[in-house]
Image 1 (cartoon, rainbow, N blue to C red):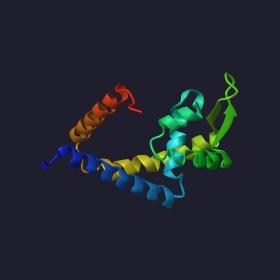
Image 2: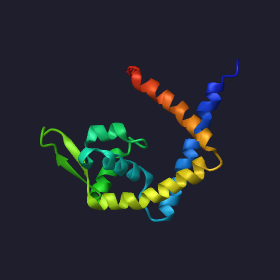
Image 3: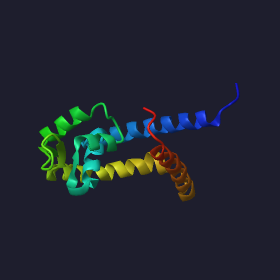
Image 4: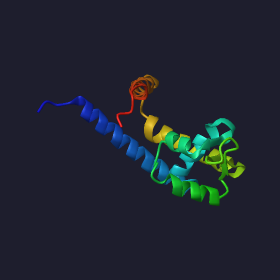
Length: 151
């Protein structure tokens, strides 16, 4: 069987992502900060117009565990970091709304998160290497977004 370089690249990407996420998760936990899945949810909400999103749109936007989203939202709401409310436009739609306590917790965790990305991912790579990697991964991402979902 012929060696396929794309399989090596894919494996490396998965291993790096898993290891960096694990290390950042450990750093956040050691500092008593947000779990990374909560960080992901709050980050998406902080970037959304009016700091609010439909739950279905939130699920589509988060990067990490979509399977644990409902549990995370329940816990984030219990902590006062977000609030669920009915959409004023459609009573059947539930929105997740970032609360001031969530924005504050996100701001504190963001410093650790950025430091973790720099330390575990970017350290040892040149600006040129990081830009090339970003260009390559953006190209794959754009192609996937432009394709029709095969489901």
